[in-house]
Length: 462
Image (cartoon, rainbow, N blue to C red; front, side, top):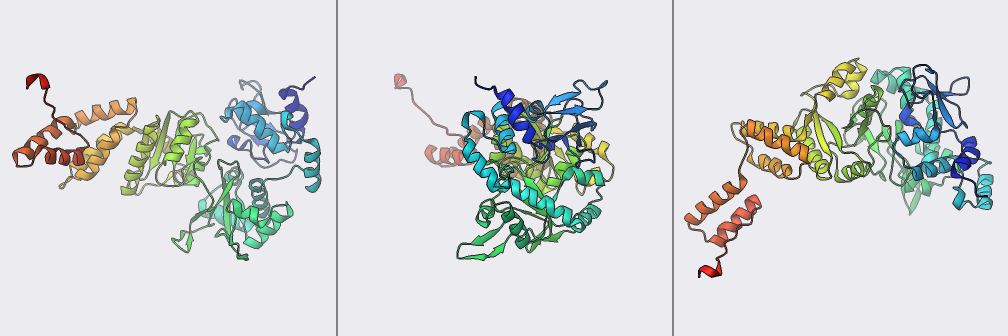
């Protein structure tokens, strides 16, 4: 009789799986392994950090039995809460435990693979770099201590971040090799770089940095690194470095869902700051949401999101780019504009201004209203920026229904509404009156406005 997938997971997977060590429960902010052998983490049901998980067990137990709506949560349900499909859950659980799914098991091959790895499930390159940099973090506390002091983080916050350390290329490669990972495999996901002609000349740019892990579409994490303190040097030693083989299509921390609107920020530590105050924050790694990220978010069922931007020119331009990409795929976007010179999310949380940060998020502005107000400010300048106004109006053509309504309402109330068709016809008339042929005038209008104006004579009238 064929074993059910539920029984298979229960009998063959859970007894071999430490879900926290494999990173499957990061969205519940697990703490370090306690003396009694369990991890303390947030309860998937009530959200309080009073739950615990024992490695090799099948679920999460909450201590708030009388106040929690579901004191016991199966691991399966905890992963489903993180937005994973049933198929993804089976695949992830089996891969993390080193077990083939029941319909595709090759016991002999699996046993050989385990034997070559000391009886443990084999690690992928992405899993190995996480393990190695976590080991180096334990051995090199000074780097993390410097980072913690410079950021003003508590020990609890540091335990939640679970950052690693990258000491130097030789030590990292040596530890990876001990787990069966070759330098070619390390290069394949951007841990190090070298030329085929000179394989001994290795570089990475990650030496001496604290390390985080950015999810990647192929399932293998890519590392990012930050100097422990200071601003760094823009070219020689920038504050942040990302693996050269990185793709940011999946926003950082996106899978650590919270019961709030999704808030996109540029920096990884700002995303963590939002997560720490129970806001669903994710990092996009640049000033604006790009087309690939927008497509990924839409594919994950996101229909509404917010983007937190700086209150300067780069922030305004980033907001417009994010609006263009997100709204085009059906995501209604709101903008959270920080004031000029205002602290970022991480600085606000560290300074104890969580309420002010949440108030900013709650006062977010719909994309349509944001564009109308920005457009009005450009027209109010002594020399109106007509080029940027035209750019905003072009973006408005791709807004979602909700944002389009806000754009039209605020454009009217702010006195910036324009009848583009009438303007195009009026300009065409004046160009023809000025001596241009109709073909020449219509070409000018097409280039300036995008409108193609034609004149057709009805044959019935001669």
